[in-house]
Image 1: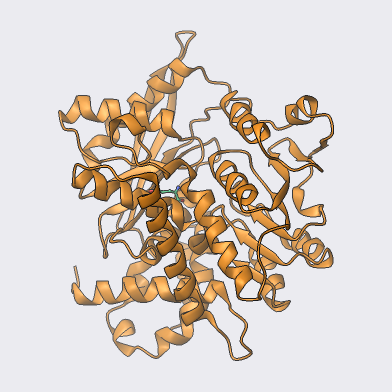
Image 2: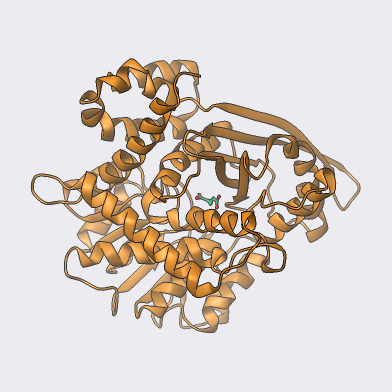
Length: 445
Ligand code: 2IT
C-alpha cells in the first residue's frame, strides 16, 4: 500500500478537509503492514473503497426562531460504510460542523462499530446549528425541520442515527416525534431515546461507563487499579458526566471538568451533588463551566486554560476532537501521568499520540475507549427489534463484556515486540480486518 500516495490523492480531491485526512492517515499508517500481507485486499482495492464514504447527503434546514425570523442551516448525513450492518452513528449539532468533521467521525465510527462485536456499519450526521442560547421551542422546531428532510434517508435496518455533541435525549425525542408523524411507523430508527418510548437503560451513562471499564483494563495490564487515583476530565456534557460518575463510583477522585471558557479544579473531587450540577450547567445552554467555582468556592476556575496542566494520575478527554495537543502531551509526560484515555472522538492530535507512544505510556484512542456508547445503542436496537426491554444489570453486563472484548482485540493486534500495547495499532487493525473481510465476502458493488 502506498499510504502517502493515497493521502495525497485524497487531499487533492477533498481540499480543506484536515480532520478527515488526519483520521484516514492514522488508520492507514497503522494497517500498512498487515495490508501488505494480504494481496487480496490490494486486488479488491479495499483501501480506496474504504476511505470514501458510500454517500454524503446534504440538505437545507429552514426554521423560524422565537422572534419570527427565518433561519437557514445546513444538514448532513454521511453514510460511510455498511459492510457489517446498517449505518449507525450520532448526529452533531454545533457551529463547528463541516463535511470534514462529519467525514472524520463517520470514518472512525466504521472501525469503532466493528470493534463493538455488534453488526453495525458507520455513519455520522448533523448540522452547523448551534444550540447555544436557543430556547426549548427553537430547538424543537429545528429538530423537526431537520427530520423533515432526513427521514427519507434513514430506517431501522438502513441507517440509525443517535446523539453526539449538542444532541441528547431531548433532541432525540423531538426527532423521533417528527419521524413517527412522517412515516406512521414506530420503530427503533433512532437510539438514545427516552426510557418511556423504547430507550435503553444505561444508554445515557454508557459512553463514560464504558470508557472507565476500558481504562480499568488498561491499568490492569500494569498491575494497577483506578481506586485512589486522581483524574483530570475535560468537558461537562453527557460523556464527561458518565465518566465522572463511574470514576467516582470506582474510588477515583476527579479533580477537573472543562468548557469552552476554561476549566475548574476542585481539590475535593467532583462527586455527589456536584455531578448532578454538571448536567444543570449543560442544560443552562450557556456552554460555560465558570459558575461551578461560584457555587463551590473551594474550586478554582482557570479561564482559557486546559485541565491537562494539572498533576494527576489519569487524563480523560471527554470534550471534542484535537483537544489535547503536542504541548499538552509534553506537560502530561512531565507530570508523570500514568494513563491517557480518549473518551472524545480523536481527542488527541497526532503529535500528542506520537509522544505518548514514544514514552511507552498507557494511551488508547477514542474508537476503542468510547465505543461503549454506540455499543449500548446497538443493544437498544436489539431491544427495539425484539419489542422488549432489558434490566440495567443486563445491559451493564453486556457493556462490560463488550469493553473487555475490545480491550482483548487491542492486545491481540497491538502488542509490540517489547511487550508495549499500542492501542492505536490494535484498535485500527482489529476494526479494519473485520470491515475488510466483510467487504471482500460481498464482492464488488
Ligand atoms: O461517537 C459516537 O460513537 C456517538 N456519538 C454515539 C453514536 C451512536 O450511534 O450511539
